Image (cartoon, rainbow, N blue to C red; front, side, top):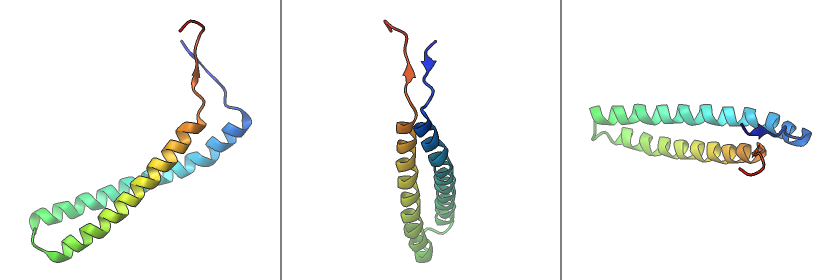
Length: 90
């Protein structure tokens, strides 16, 4: 079984700093996705309502922004985590 490297103190500190940002970004992304789904549901019930379409475009912008923030922080967090050490010959 591969051994995991212990992160050095700088990496550990970075993990402790970035993880709360990651969790917050994920919660925001999930909330914005839920709001977009609710607007889709309303659009199905009333497809010609221009107010719903306007709100949907605004929500789509918020959803895309939340997704981009989540992906950026996730990428940063994954770069902070050290790769697993492998045994010689693997």
